[in-house]
Image (cartoon, rainbow, N blue to C red):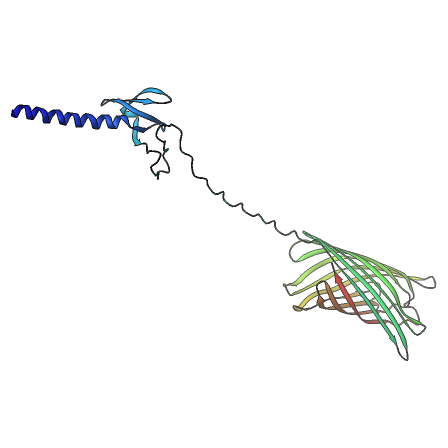
Amino acid sequence: MRKTKRNLKFIQTLACAASLVFATRGGDIIIHLRNGDRVSGKITAETPTEVTLQSGSLGKIVIPVGQILKREEIVAANAPTATTNSVAINAGTNAPTAKPPTTPAPKAVVTKPAQPKHWNSEVQLGLNLRYTTTDQQEALAAAKTTYAKDHFREILEYNFTWGRTENTQTANKMYGSSKSEYDLDTRWYLFGLAGGGYDEVRLIDLMVEADPGVGYNLIKKPDFVLKTEVGFGYQDQFFKGGHDVDTYSGRLAGIFTWKIYDKLTADGRVEFFPNLLSLHEYRFRGESTLRFPLVKNLSLNLNVVDIYDTQVPPGVQNNDLQLRSALGIKF
């Protein structure tokens, strides 16, 4: 009797062990191989040296134990999964579950750097009318255009002034110039200037000049720039009456730009031309402009121009001083 009871307990133990083995073999698993491949299916047989797997897509597969890296149980379709690097296969299928949609990264906004402005222009217009004991009318127009790129600059200027007091012509002159500059370094630059015009009051039918030379930046700050120029000047003046005077001279000049404060700027130049053939003769020309902005691109300008020449026809004053105001438009 006792022997029979011991036999029954042994049989029950074997049955439990067999049920556990077949329960493990009957479930779907994923076998990760050492070469990086993965195989899914049901284990039908297993020995210490190999594992037999029944795969739905590949059929019966015998895998050596030495090639197996790890085993992974397949989670049922209704069970939550939390794996990220391994492939989860639903029960009854071999297709991998769809990955959750990813939000695309926002595209980087590329901002192109602002292109430098090569052209800058300004036009000044003025009109002074006075009707009292002495009637006076005066009009002026001035334009300046600058082109700058890399080491090169081109400066174009044009001035016209017309005035009358009673029946006497007090101003009727025009002057235009072109100046090219080329930077050798941050301080030194070469320049070439050519200009021409007329002045009816000073009896000049035509005047032409050419002034090449070299310049140097003495002070170069954001709110103040001062530079000097040294060169050679040639001028030919054709006066009324048929005679002309040509002059070979040196040229000494000072040019400045000054930002006095945010809404007030000044710029100007002073030029001295000593006659190289007759040192007691010379020419002087000074000009300055004070600018006060009114609105965007519109400013009120006060101009001062002074010209002195020792070689003038009889009856013409050596000095010509002009004070004028005008509206300036930049674009």
